[in-house]
Image (cartoon, rainbow, N blue to C red):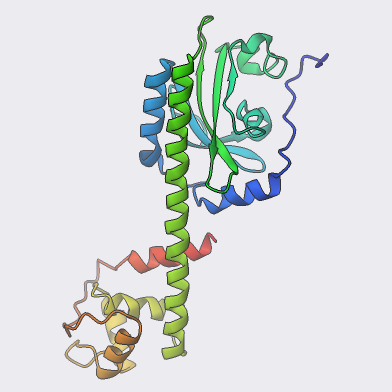
Length: 275
């Protein structure tokens, strides 16, 4: 029992190191993807009839908000883990429903329970990935004295959270697949063009993918006999294009635009930096 009127943090889950790795793999920490997740919070608010709904991932030190509704617009995108309600929802795959926060031993000394806005109800629904790790929570809160969730509301919110978890799983798989394909593509490119640095390779890959490049890239590729003087791919470039799986069967003239540089491959490369 807490005799010092202090809000105490929850114990760490037994699988914490593996859980943290699963959170990292989502690639969502410190990324602003609110538009992808706001629908889940809107539905949670509607299902629960509560004013506040938020979704967050819990890493080692903080809770990172994927999205929130009913909270201040200037709220930081993350808060210290040790000050969250949701840390207590990491220990079980079942929803954590607290109907009376002010009389709950875990929550009664929290600053927003014993002080403004005087939260009375908390419902935390664990986001469980396909491997069984709890990544974070979808939550609803209220300040009304009689706030509660019915069995059917809890079931609906659990299913909604499952859909959110599935979306995160799919995004993780797509991200890792893209990174894997990018690594493979770069390795193959380096074998053909070992003298090129990463920037040079991106320029060449951008060209053979059919996108526009700047004048400097055109000049560089021409100097390295990958473009002819008329801006067409040379036989060497077409052979590399085919080996890399970019052969479209059409040998188009390469166009350039000083103001428009293809960002697709740059984005793929950036995925590697986050692995």
